[in-house]
Length: 314
Image (cartoon, rainbow, N blue to C red):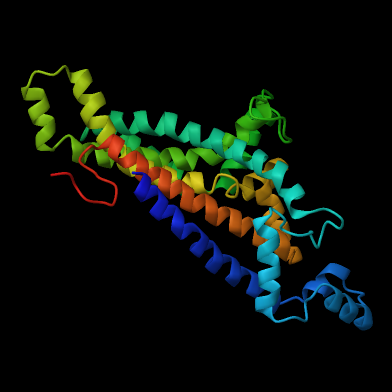
């Protein structure tokens, strides 16, 4: 296992080099000169050229990238163009944690509701309960967040007046409830459908019939054989969700006034704040690779037939 992990981690610097160079080059050659963005629309041409020379923007892009990479290795992503005098690391640190907490809450809601609902529907295949569950999940998956959020505010904040409308107070504050529900509802629908489909496939396998023929209690069969194997596609989906924990909630953050990184990232794109954009992409790529590695390590625990590398044990 150690060899497999080391081999997978060895690819991380290569992937980061490719992604970060493409992003860095787009920031240099894409629309919007970095110095003009930094100085604003009333920039003087002489001052712009002087700052370009001071900051090394006239050097070849490879030299600029090497200098940038040397700083990134030390945890220095540079200074924000939009927020003068503030480093990118300083801006991202707190906002990433806020977004991560919100996404964790939504993910917990999706899993805690979606998995039991999918199992319930699968064991009642062909009944009204199954049809109703599938219909409800399709409805939940088809409604976008920007429609779910106003309805939640209208019902729970305006009509019932039991939950706050906006702001942020941490993971255990009531202000996280509505945004977590708005983000978690589509996840519930996706996980329910995945769990149902996977469970239907698992319960038809020979090893399930063999386990029952051996006289194992039904609770053991369901827990040890059905549930663990049915969770494999769910874990794959959760891996992608974990990779985007701190970056996928920008619509909800803007709607509920949450000071997360998603909102900052969107603002940075419109403001062409390239240091923040580069940092978010590098961090997001790292999280994606690490999340997929974690998912691969979970597979053999769920199904002992799976070996690391994708082969099956003989």
